[in-house]
Amino acid sequence: MRDETSLIQACIKQNRAAQQKLYELHAPKMLGVCHRYASSREEAEDMLQEGFIRVFQKLDTFRFQGSFEGWLRRIIVNTAINIIRKYQNLKYECDIDSAQYTPAASGDVIASMYTKEVVDMVRDLPNGYRTVLNLYAIEGYSHKEIAGMLGINESSSRSQYTRAKALLAKRLEQIESFGITEHVKVSHP
Amino acid sequence: MSKFRIHNSFEEELAKKADEFTLQPRVATWKGVDRGIQKAQSIKQAIRLAIVSTCAIVAMGLVYFQSSKEEANQVQKTAPIAVVSPTQENPLKNIGRTEVPPAGINQETTKRKPNFSHLRSFPGFDREEPIGSFNEELRLGDELNNTTKNMALHAVMPQNISLSLSPKGAESETIKRRKRPVSIRHKDAWYINASVAPAVAFRSLSARTAYAAPYKSLKDGYDHSVKTYSAKIAIRYFFTDRFSLGFGLRYTQLGEIVGMAPRKNNSLYTALADEYNYDVNAMNSIGNAQSHMNQYHYLELPVTIYAKRNIGKRYSLHTGIGMSLGYMTKESSRVYDFRVDHYVNNSKFLRRWAVGAHVQLNLAYDVNTRWSMYAGPELNYALLSTYQNYYTLSQHQYSLGLNLGVQWKLFDGTKSRAFDLN
Image (cartoon, rainbow over all chains, first blue to last red):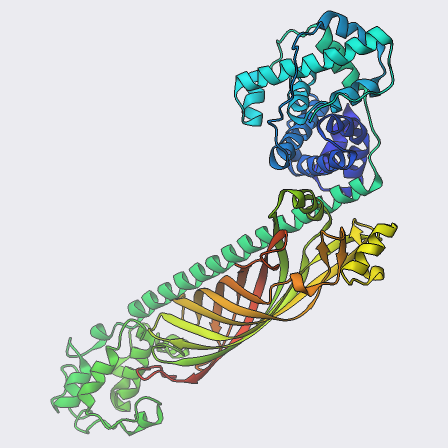
């Protein structure tokens, strides 16, 4: 913790070696975060790059009160959202006949899956669903906050989340029923 | 972020798994971050430099303005003409028009008519005018300061009464040593300017189509600013004492450093290069393995309106704003062609004509009646995109530089009353 504090202070003083060290320390995890929001590896790396540039520009505003990783993650997520809002259409529609899902069963299945499978499953969702699911289920934002971040209605956020969850449930049901652990894409337009 | 929302097992498990996921970024990503930080720092530094230089110029101006004001006040205090005047009014008037000696001056010393012949050696005093009109010369305006008045008075008095007219406290030596104004009036005067401005050139990029947006984002990460310069020669005409119009010829060099990588080794791109007549060996993809400096050379016709503010005897502030019409005479650039997905040599994408806007703030120092030097920040912004309208990216270039120049007076103004007593 103390090491991280001194590292951050060195970064504030524009020490390039310290900046690189801080980047190397957090980049793998943050790329994992970006990977969940992006539709390709290249896009994820762009998000990471732009996010870290912003992090280093705003580092002097970090107050050393909370977790640095939490602060860093918020900036990375915000950058990812900005990129998505700028270049992608969030209003993806996906026909789902049944929006029914079984969360209790899904939770158990997720626990039994490999991490990469879970992330790939999330990444296969349409953009809008994926973004809302990431923000609500993983980052812990409320629908009100998500609506503000994405410039959509709160009800849209809720419905997109419900649909995303339904799609995932469908996928998890398949896995649970047939024991499929191999990556199968959820079809979407 | 809501901290008190209750997650069910689905979300908990999902969050847990997602948090465990990590990926190792490529080395190029760090290079992009590093370049982005450097770029942000150079922009910050340029802005800081502009602010500091502007503040310094304004501060210097204020100091000189204040000191010149104080000097003027001091001269008024130490050389009060009215106080030393024996007639309590205007000694020149009495001396020039009557032969009655002023009260308090010895009758014998004033019997001789005052001799003004020595005044003819001063420029500006060589006109055949009655002595009485010299008082009008003394009332030229605010610019003609009290020092000059005292010197003139000192000179006009016959030698035998000059001692009796000296201000109390023997301040005359101080008065004699004061600097005279070298350029007072500019109206109708013509000047020629020559300047050079080392600068940093930047560019703003925007995507005209959705498919170009990711490339724009990549280019923003890989490209960066260049150090450049411009040189100008211009004629300046003062249509009032304060306002002037400048027009001339300027050479400007703009550009950027583009980040590139080796060509994608694929037969598809060889075929595309053939189709669009590109040299396949001169194709590069976007990246940061190597870089190329894009250079655009313009010849421009700038027109600038200046406002002048005197801030002392020899210093003045000149604020200029204007526009320019330019033509790209030469270029050395690599442009990204989206059809072949590579950087190529294709000047057809570039716009030949340019329209720009500029603002400048110069602090000028009058060396003498003809020569002056000036320095100050200058911002140039290209109003038109570097690329043609059909190209998928729109790029506006701008540069921030330090303008350094000299000015030489070609012709005096018709109403010029500047004179140098040195």
